[in-house]
Length: 369
Ligand code: SF4
Image 1 (tube, rainbow, N blue to C red):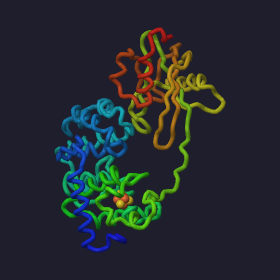
Image 2: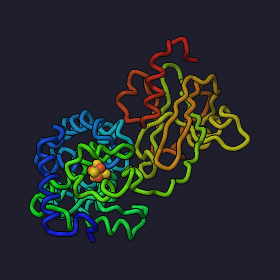
Image 3: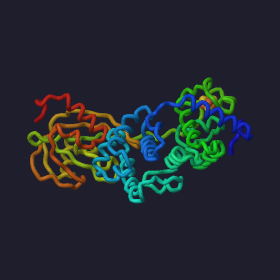
Image 4: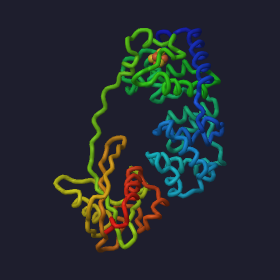
């Protein structure tokens, strides 16, 4: 149900016209918006799920250089895909992209061209299916991401929390009604662009807004930024994590995480979460014993990195350590290997471990045990 200033067909037509005219005159020249290739659009929309637009260009270009077609992506190993994804985080996206590419390649290489068909692919939810079907194939499906949600809450003056299921359904219905038929790709991108650049979270620039005349929050509220109203999220727990830079001669031990779960398939300096009553050094020796069944001597702390995940955050303490005894086993990891420090760049690491490596590069060889 579209409420308020957007109730009549004439008002909706004016809204679409003003929004699309603004978008076509003002859109940013983003690398992935230059292409009409559905494969490129799909990759970009998966990347955009958790990545800021201004950080994405270099990753997008690098990924397509590595895998120019869906067949190249399907034929790659998971390690190669994770390496090309390195730095983007949320690695389940990369693993699903890889699975979906295999599925598409096995079916002839054409991306499904409908909303429903796209939803069948691993890693594609309602947002991505709407974005790809509208941008690549001009199917009439409205997108609802955080930017669009905010714009709609303000345009329609929706006072309830948009994360509630019923409110989300109202927003999707409103999006369907406002959508410009036959121009869904541009319309959706215009709504997202408006949210990103004009109708911003804290300080919407209503004076520059092309659809201010249709906006209830602008007409009726002292401060449109009061919307959307969201209940505060619970505080994320914080953990202390110890990791070992375990040397054996000139080589370091690295371990690969199990392929399912957080950071699945990535390589790491082995270690784990501190338990109550133990020091970080004790934690590290215990984790290494439990995960790899080897004994180490823990030395000094070399690096400390703060990192946030969706549901928790960590302080990662990286310790210098010396291998003592035992043959590593794959108890809590998928694989392990000893590598020269110069070869670390060939492996896909999480962002937190990559920052540890950057800090290590500033250490002299005299810091090794
Ligand atoms: Fe957002 Fe202001 Fe435009 Fe309304 S008028 S859509 S609050 S920028």
